[in-house]
Structure formats: structure tokens, C-alpha cells
Length: 519
View: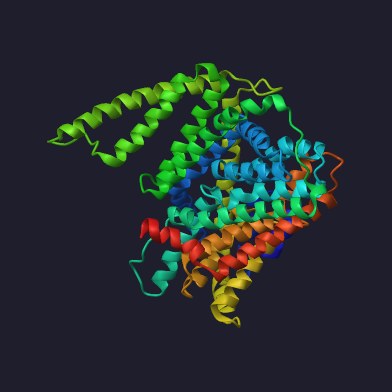
């Protein structure tokens, strides 16, 4: 079944229909040989309904809206220009700036393709013009662009967290534990934070090493001395809003104030108001008041009981309720102003407004994610109906090396599947099949989820089929050859593999923070 899917994909068929079509073809073959019951496919409707009513998955379109809005509102462009002014005067400084911007975009968008393309369009011409090696430029942009896979809040971690949670419950029930401790998306966010930041640090160390040992590959940026006075103010204006948004989204999850879905809605509204303020920076007061009101609402919700349907309300709670009502009014006004501005603002060279373009992109990406979920459901149901899950269970449990042997094989399979499948297909198809088997071997679910996320990130970078390489090739100038991109990314692939080995050797990197935050 997997080979057939790969053949269809190489033939150019859409992923979702390749998965569903392969499932139906093999279901028909199995039925013809009397080894498959078509009644199994009756579970498709309940799976689709389960996805529709899954509150965790509502975070997916909200995070997508947040990321696309930040991309269209030129936040990335301002970040790159400001950090380039800050670090550009030292050797390797522009590369460090690109890595830091990639990390910030990863934490605020979580969309690999958008990040790589944006960084390629914005930073590649500047770096090449200032004498940077095309290989180093290509590797830096690709590697920093894929950080959206591992640095929370990430769409990958939302989807992976949902699948790991379901697999963990299945594994515990099989072992006889009918009331297991739940694994949440918040656990995965907390678990991925330290490994993600460690990767950023390793990338920067490589940039510094290249500047020291091969100074011709990353020269200092020649800057206009007249801009030095404005550097600090520009950096603060460019950095503070997205960092505040990241802290609000990630901090509200880790502090237990909001679920990932609620935090995603805060991120979507925050990105909208950030774009509205940037459109008309001289008249941004209503938007700033709205942002302040949103922060006040978060604090009030976490501090006071704001329910009004009570027989007795304490005086302090009553004050908090009236304050919350006023804050809601101010927030509504700020949202209205921001919506009006992004609706009236046109994209460069297009008649379409920024808001319409963001909504359309969000709809297309969300539809792609969920139609893949439906196709993957058909595929996995037929796979299990033909006894594939029993085959996988027997294969993994009989491997030499026990738990570690099984983990290594699964990681290798996911790594190679990353050449031809996107992370969404791998998460929906492979994880439900292999994760329950691994979790029955006393593997920590948070550590396993972070390992899988970092592994998928590595497959995005690896030649010859890494998706990030194709994204960059599409926007790179003709002077940068494909071989430059492939060779430039290899040191970063080695860094990724070292990171994976370190995470495998020290699982506490992924498990310590969730245990501290959530107990």
C-alpha cells in the first residue's frame, strides 16, 4: 500500500486522493480475495465527525491565519532589516540575523513553506550582494525556515500532539490501564521548547565558526553610518510586537491560562491587530488600546470569577466583571479598526485586499490539511482491516535491540518518507500505526512526539527531495545553482542529526519542562 501511494505521488496525483484511492483499491482487492470486510469503511463517517468536533484541531486554521497574516503584513521584512542593522557590522552577523528571524517567524507562523520563501525573497539577495557564500546562504535560509516544525506554537506539534494523545490512550488501554494520565498539545509545546532553542543555538555556533575559520564566506555588512542613530528605535519597533505576540500565545498555554485552541485565537486576533497597526502606524492608538484590553482580559480571566449567572457576586468580582465588559468593548473597537485597515489595504501588484488574500490562503491550507486527514483515515482503516497493524506490531516487537531497535527503525522510516510525503500525511498515516506499539514499550509520549517532530524537520532539509530545498529553489536567483543549495544544507543536516542523537541520549531535554510546568 505504501509503495502504491508513492507511485501515485510520483505520477503527480494529489496526496489526499492518492491515500484514499489506494485504500479503496486495496479494499476491493482484499474483498475479492475474501480477506477484507467492506463494513469496516462504515467507520469513516464517525472519524470525520470526530475530526469536526475535535476542539484541538480548531487551532490549526487559527495558527495558519496568524502565520499568513504576519507574512502578508511585512513583519518578517522589518525583522530582517532591523536585525541586519544590529548584527551586520560583524562577520557572520547577517547569517545570525537570518537564523534569529527564522526562529521568531517559526514561533509566530509555524508554516515552513511560507517561512523559507519569505526568507529567500528577503534575505538571499542582500546576503549575496554583500559577498556571502551561496552555499552558506542557502543552508542558512533552509535550516532557519524549517524551525517552524519544532519551535512552538507549531501546526506540526498541534497535529502530532492530537495523534500522540490518541495513540497513548490506545496503548494504555491495551495494557489494562483504563484511566491513563492525558497527554496534551501543551505538553508537546513545553517539551519541544528546549530542543528547538538548542537547535537555534547550534545553528548560530556554526555561523560563528564559519566566520572565524572561513571569513571570506560571511563578510561584515557595509552599512550607512547615518542610520546608526535610528537602529535602536527600529529594532524595538520591529521586535517588540511579534515577541509580545509569541509570549502571549505560548505563555498563556504554558501558564495554564488558555488551551492551545484558545491561545491560537489570541494569536490570530493579535496578528490581525499587529497588521492593522502597521498599515497606519501614525494612527495606531485604537489598535494599541485593543491589544492592551486583550492583555487585561487574559489577566482578569485567570484571576477572578467572571461568571454573571450567580446568586451572589463578591464586590471585587463585580468590579472585575465591569472592567472585563469595558475591555471587551475596547477590544472590539480595536479589532474593527484593524479589520477595516487590512480590508482596505491592497497587496503589491494585486487588486485583492490583504484581508481577502489572508482568508483565501487560510482556507486553502486548512482545506488541504483536513482533506488529507480524510484520505489518511480511509488508508489507515483499510491498512488495519487487512491486518497491517498486527504486522507492524509483530515486526517492531521482534526487532533486535528491543525498544531502541524499534525506535530506530520507526525514525528511519519516517525520515525516508519525509522525502516524498509532507509532515501532515506522515502524522496522519504513520503515527497512528506505529505510535501505539512504541508507547506500549514504556516510551515517554512527550519525548517520542518531540523526536518525531525533529526527525520530520530533518527530512525537510535532506537532499535530494527535501521540501525546503524545493521551496528555496523556486525563489533563488539563477546565480545560485541547485548543487549550491544541496551542498550548503548538508552541514545543517549534520547539526540536525547531532541534535537528534543528543535528544535520544538525554530525554530529559524534552520531559523536564513539561514536568515542571504541568507536574
